[in-house]
Length: 239
Ligand code: APR
Image 1: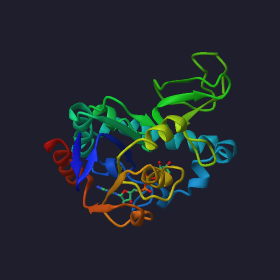
Image 2: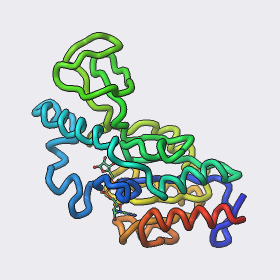
Image 3: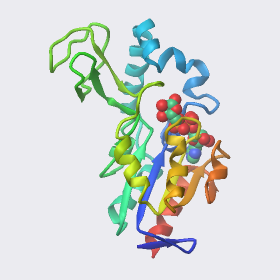
Image 4: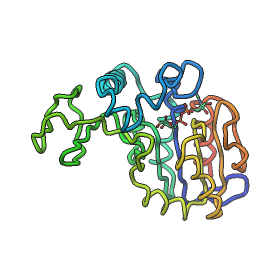
């Protein structure tokens, strides 16, 4: 148990978004210079876009996966991992990020609700498998051997995120909800703060700026995630 602003805290849910990886050098989606500034998400991140122009979609995600080798976790990832290791209660980490920086930052549990760049999905056998390299329209599934049905293991707009039952269960019993580096425009993740507060949780938002959902939180701490997350973890572990 710990306390935050007088509230007893034993079960924490943390939702992370692209802002957590920004200081590692990965572009966010909606900030200036973000991924959706040069691409319409509807041309890349939908099943229809993949059917229309698979080459563009393969190239986009192959490039993003290859970029992972050039970046490293930052102090925000490391602070979160430390909280998971040292907090005497429960810490459940759910991320919208498809990079692997939480794992490389030392996180022992990461729930990737929007899929993972380091995984591929076969549309023929529906198996998810570790990505060993680039894929294209001719790639063969290592599991079922079907050619031409491999896709990035990314949850696109119009698809149902992974692990929703487990996430709903943990939100329904948490007493602290923290959202870090997410703009609060993409649902269902943007609605998690409501679910947590309905369960009686205290809600803290960490963001560089005011987000679409700031008003739904009990408190917002503004600044870079590397600073605000590290400070919040210190506070939670100080008790
Ligand atoms: N520290 C804290 N917050 C930051 C930082 C930083 N260093 N840098 C950026 N941010 C904040 C921005 O202010 C913004 O609110 O991170 C947020 C990033 O928002 P988005 O780019 O919209 O990313 P995210 O919320 O993760 O997007 C959600 O949209 O396109 C889909 O599937 C994709 O998972 C993604 C989802």
